[in-house]
Length: 65
Image (cartoon, rainbow, N blue to C red; front, side, top):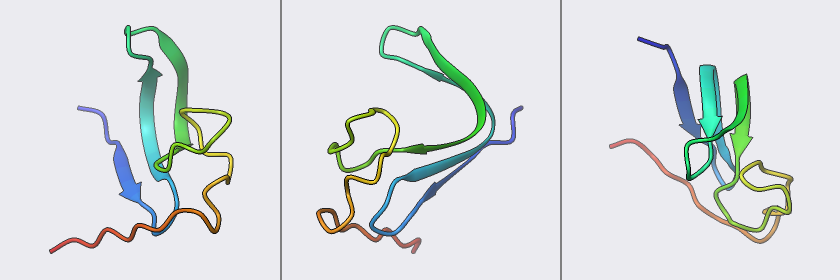
C-alpha cells in the first residue's frame, strides 16, 4: 500500500505527500508527484493546484478531535 499523507493546512490548501497519481474527474492523469498543494478555496486560477489566491479571502482551521 502506498504511503500517502494529506494534511489540511490552516487557512490554506491541502498538502499531499507521498508517491501518488493525481487524476481528473474522468480518470486521466494530471500528474504523478511526491508533493502537491491542492486548492480548498476554489479561487485558484490553476485548479486543482493552489496559487495563493486564498490569502486574506479564505478561513478554515480543521482540528482533529
